[in-house]
Image (cartoon, rainbow, N blue to C red):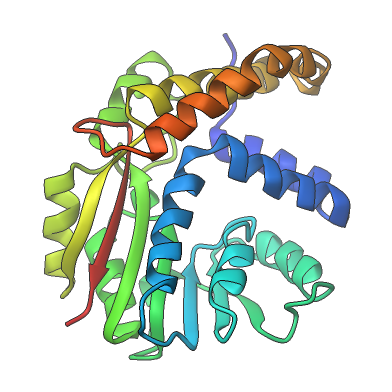
Length: 272
């Protein structure tokens, strides 16, 4: 089976939605529904938003398509969001979308390398979703992000876990551009401490129910799109007609429990 790297496949989606606001909103909805990491990250953010600590400045470190920035702006209505990514084309696309939104005066996007990040003690929240697994010097990045936090600020991280290697053994398509397969609870907690943070909640995501949903909702369709091409789009509506509701039920079950083992990991740490 021929294979194309996962990130270039995602770039194809970026090209499709580049200047179409309707398609981008639809794409955001699909990401929120299908990707269980979004369920877990949003839950952590809502928990922080429900605390009494005021939030005025948020950093989205590795914003990608900008899908989490909508939630940051909604959950923290008094905060400004600074979103950065190393990919300039992603930044330009996000800027185009958000400059035409009701939040245009509360968010800005810039291209940045997190290994050169230097903005000390500015933010109450730093969000970093599926970024650290791509960077060999992950502790250095976490130290720099920690320096950006005010005292009492929180770092929210999501990443694949060490158990994602089981999928890598089947097909390296999903991890071939990673510096590591992922983290264990113990390793991520230890690296947070090395960066000067106190882990307060680190646990696995994508347990057996969530992983099953990922296989039917994400893995197979992505492999089809890569190996068959966008002609597979003709087949996907019929596939999702059969799998969407079961997949959503599996995601809901997984999001409501803490698994002892899972192919993803989410962590929240505080700067004391």
